Image 1 (cartoon, helix red, strand yellow):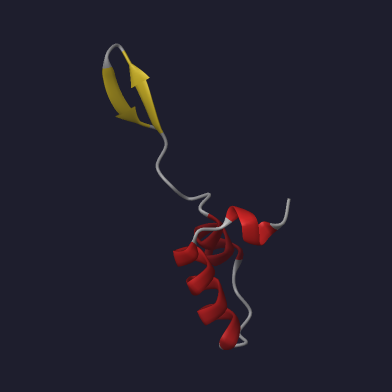
Image 2: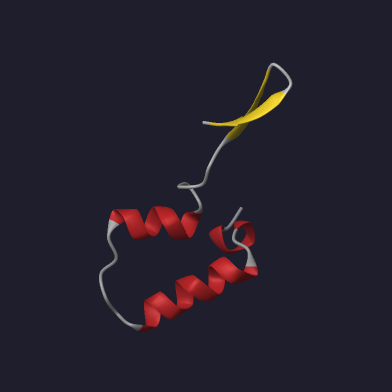
Length: 51
């Protein structure tokens, strides 16, 4: 499976706009683009908690 199949349209737009600047991106920016820095929610005792 290709990376472009996994990204949403908004994420692709962000990626291409950043790529046009031809700047080196930091690891934090790459993680933000890929969506790994999102909140994780878990159900605990009937309540939904953020991890």
